Length: 523
Image (cartoon, rainbow, N blue to C red; front, side, top):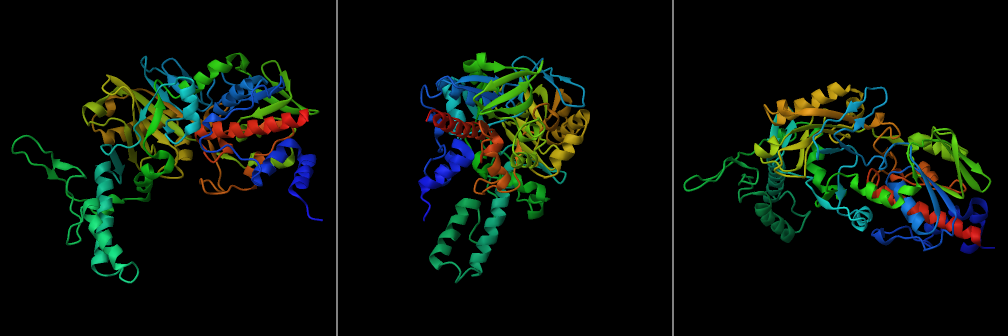
């Protein structure tokens, strides 16, 4: 006898409960996952009906979960190990302490009003969910300048402007195409009409003349700027191709602004990235217990029991939403299935590092650089110029954001350096980009996420199917499944990994599982 979809779902429900049934319905197209544009997500009003939920972690996923559950009528308790909310959305200001395991604490000395976004740095305009929460709670946003053609690229020991590197590379590639067309090398492979259209396009697109040669016309910059009266501009001569591609490290900078979630317009909350989690926190503050690290996660019949410190307290609830990073969760005593425990062991985390200094804004006054990134093949990888308070006396210069942008081995190597060495390498990089100006850098601070307690990494790295179009493997799929009344969320359980958007989206999916299980209990 053929197995109907309803009979199949009934069997899945009998074996795995309402959560497993809901996941199966999603896979069969009978229940839709949260769509792009899920800014209108909400659980049915009153659907919680007083049931209790304990949320582990007060990062974005935990705060979103608490907010939405409370709105739906659930009794919510949030347990957070730190003395602050936000998790890896962390803004460091003067007077704050940066604690790294096994190293002396650093006391941040920035002047009032200055800050470092030590974790999350920017928000793509396509991240509709997190942007909607920002709007909903009145968080003011401002542009984050992600690309600046005036910034420098320091590769192979030579510094060139980004505009020169990008435009000359375009010119060289266009010249190769023009010469191939003119030599009839593409005849028979592409229609004559199409080749003629492409050939005409190469002149305005990349400065390729009728002779098939690229000649800079000013887009790459000028050796003499145009001025008043008789001062005519003189374009810079073209760089040779080996100057444009001195090493494989330069590849990512050429592609950076074309990455889907790095395209303009990028945004940031005015005053610091932590404005978003703090705004959500204001609506759930009575529910949150800070300084309460989880020490065990246990099943209690059909309910869940979470032990937490200090004092080995316990919180028992109908459901739990676990938003802790997999690398930490794996070490907490628990009653999870062998499959879940095995999956947690397979998640790697990126030990990203940031280094920042306070300084007078010489990059603006001397070099007319207002926001954007400089790139380098040095271990610090890039320099991020502040996108706020243009023209102010001082700013915080991010002199390293090491995440494997230019070399996959950089995060581990840079993270292994002492704080003093991280500062030295970063200072030297600023000196190469701005000769004579590194002496103006002060109050340096180094944040190595691999050593930050209760994080031990800036985000999850999935080796199988990391890209948006990839389908991740069995370990990822296992972590999507509930463990009885326990569901899981966090940026690591999304295809928007390493972003606040992914944390919020995964929370929405986890809450739909809670809602399905709560509804099943009533039925």
